[in-house]
Length: 419
Image (cartoon, rainbow, N blue to C red; front, side, top):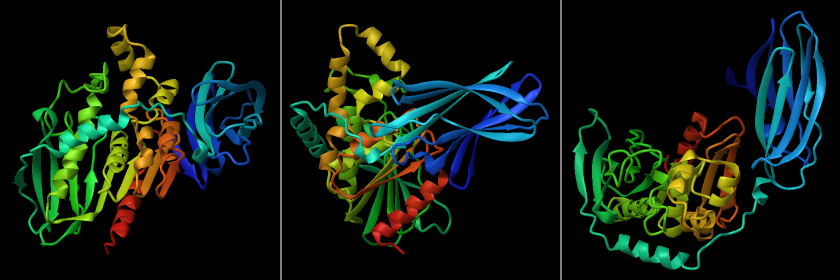
């Protein structure tokens, strides 16, 4: 089994294995939180032998790029005395380029083989990815954004009975968006009259956002875009939604998802109790990408928070990762090439919008993320010209620790000037 542990600045992935009757534990130790210093690799596997027997082991080391290109592969023998521990260091390697890398250790004994891996990073701020931007990109989005601004959203608001003594009113809001679909969300408004800053929450893929019930000095609007939460569906809800309409940019699934975000923002801007100078947008994964694009195209956003963001650097994404849905979709559309598919994706790639962001951006990523590879997140992040900062969580995969959210809420309040 695998568990995580933390000891000082060392983060370890603990794996339990059995060689015959001899039991041992082996874990990766990430020095300097998995960040490569001076371009020299320093990671180790700690092997603990809790028996009285000496273990004879081999470790096959492999150092590779995040898209699988092997940089070095070597095997070394190890002896671990009974009731003792051994630190087995990966072979010295000098990285020539910035980026994210993978270190693997295959530990082999007489009766058993155990495989460990960890991701590491060197100079992520220097990552650059070539732009693949259509010539009509700006016209495409200008046209679609105008359609959203011309919408009669016909907002419907339904009061939700709250807790006795609550200082906020909670409403379910329904808005007409593109193609006549209703998108819905939860609006939390302080009972005391006034003008308030807004936390605008946008959802991760298939996520159902619900009220936070946490603040009485800011408005919180948790919008469920179409096919999410309590909103209408544009088709069957499933994990294959993201390839829907991929034949062209006009019918692609994410076009109207993006436009739903602007419809929600337009609704907020129509309210007299909203302080238009203090609107923060926040989301994770898909929501991280939605946050970035909303901030890029609409400068009413004064703060953008993007956690483990998706929807960035599609070409690199498919070099590193792969989802089975794209195989199924491509088999159904054999007349379309990878190049044509990537051309459609490029209309929705946050990398092509990053330069338009004018507000501060806070990004958080998990170093071990295998769903939204960190290199793709930095491809967008590094093109942002406004004030920005990021957090890397070495032991996290496609998630953020609870402490991250607690800290972010405190930082949002400080940004808004709330006590």
